[in-house]
Length: 82
Image (cartoon, rainbow, N blue to C red; front, side):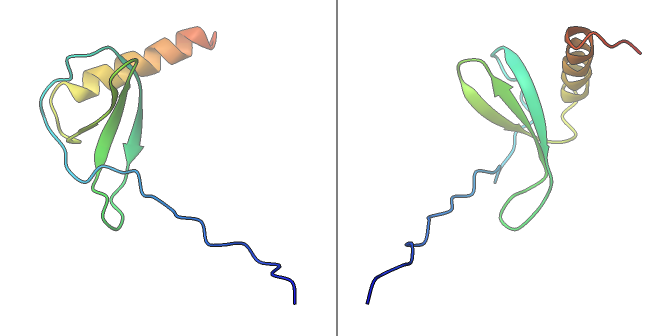
């Protein structure tokens, strides 16, 4: 009998399990919101050019301004304005 099945693929969860309110000392190029689910906690995931992803507390005082700057940059680069 032929084995017409595939082995299970290992699924890894890449999510924030801890956060910091400290500023990120690297150039931030993008961000994503991560909601709370399973082992993952609510966090802003800031993506840097060379240093990877940093998990930041949703209420970090500096995060809101960075997010707004990133949104404005995307709007300008897309050719749309508010």
